[in-house]
Amino acid sequence: MFKSHYLNLSQHNRIKNFIIYGVGQVVNLVSPLLVMPYLVAICEKEGLGKIGVGFSFALILNVWVDYGSYINGTKEIAINRNNPEIIRRKIVSIYVMKLFLLVILLFISFLLIHFVPFFNKEQAVFFFSLSYVLGQLINPTWVFQGLENYKWISFINIISKIIYVIGVFVFITKKEDYIFANAFLGFGLIISSVIGLIFLIKKYDLRLYQNVSQDALILLKQDFYLTFSQFFLSFYQYLPIMIISYVGGNNMAGQYRIIDQIVMIFRTYLQMFFNFMYADVCLQIHKNLKNGISHWLRYYGLNYGVVLLLLVVAFVFTEQILLYFNIRLNELDLMTLFFRIGLIIPIFMSISIALKQLLFALDRNKEYINITIGSSIFSLLVFFLLIKNIGLQGAFIATIIIEIMVIILYCIVLKPIIRLKK
Image (cartoon, rainbow, N blue to C red; front, side, top):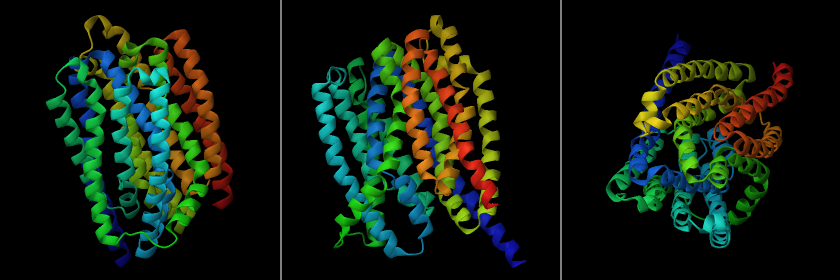
């Protein structure tokens, strides 16, 4: 009876946490949908394409700022959540490591923006986009994920997006103002993240300790190959719009950005679900492998059904969705084709993200790193060739090919491991 009561209470808390977490993520998902039609109307597709290129530049840099904190850092905090001293040292050492990396990243960014023509001709966009990188450095969401403190995660998401939306609607009033769009996104993240970090400083009495530099260097060494693989993964996820801008111009990049933003809603949702389940899946597998995998399979099976349902709705209402984004009537048929090809991506992405979580939980980071680096290098070649030869739809077809390939490789790695440990 007591066991049944405990399970019911645990299930109730998980549903409650998911609702709290979901509210913040809904704001995260909806805010781009609010501002993008306005940006298209004011800055046109060309301006939107430039905004998208700057945003992708920031997201690639964020991989190095995160440097494994959202994977190994979250996992360590989840496992040691009842040991404040370990948590304190982990948080401080990771932030020291992040600061060291930020200095290097800013130096490299200034060189790229100043000397490389592709970046230099839109240097204002790229400089303002760096504010989002600073915000991601401060962002303590990875800590709250390990602690499963979803109220603070939602708070950071909601406040940052409110500032972003208000900034866009109030201050972007003419075509040339596109350069400020990513700055508002960055400022919102900086302000909300500082508030969250202050809470952690007070709760855990965060301060520098004697060997913090040494611990930070150890983390740099331990997580280098994992971060290196994530860096390549960021090329696969965020470089296509730069390739499109380079090959087809900013107008084509704007078309891609509109469709990718909708696909990104599914990616963001799947990443949200990954983050929500990650700490618990790691903990359950750490306790009992068989029960942990059953736990993982049950939740991701249900999630996959939700994703398929949403994709069917998006497919049926494709034209209405595109018209909302101010697509011209003479472009509607072509954009409908691109959009529906793009909707195939989340079908496979849902599976690959779920399998990725299992790889991390089973400590198969090395295999994940090798797959990520290899598939990402291959993807860049496929992207370039398909975009150059068949146009914009080539970007979406390339993504589908890579997702299927990654799923097959993940299954090859996981099958003998699960069979051996059952």
